[in-house]
Image (cartoon, rainbow, N blue to C red; front, side, top):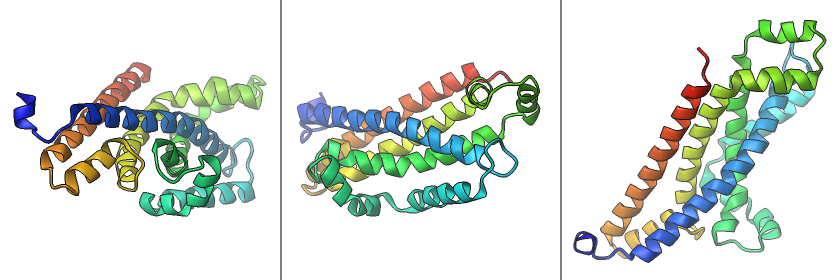
Length: 222
């Protein structure tokens, strides 16, 4: 039945491409979460009126975040080729896409983290300060737990954006479903290959969104 509907689809290749997409997304999102969380927390804490208020550091990090957040992903891949060659030793393959994916997504998530932290009730922070809580205690016991629904929601949005970025990376040889859809589907005019690759990407996105929404609803105390 499947062979009749999709005569040009090599299911073994499709499964391998799906694994490559999941690999790129998985590695990237872990690194993005750590780096983006760090940048977001620093952006929040160094802002005016906060614990580590420092306009110079805040403006520098903010500028870096804005620059990398604004560069189109395809251009970012090209700009990072020298760095990718140093880190990975190759311009093609799933690992070659990781530096651009992480550097492109982390600043985006950092802004979402900063927004999430801003939503934390100032009264809770002041109460913790009045009880003599250390900065580390305020960060890990107040700020992060209180903003967790927003952080999870943000990482969900970022993960979905990363899935789309892996598809774009595939066009220049990074592997995954994007690469298969472009080489086997578009260049060989096999629309069924492109269709199946697109459907699988949509399924991945729907699953990510469902899991993210479920976790966010469980964490949200409101």
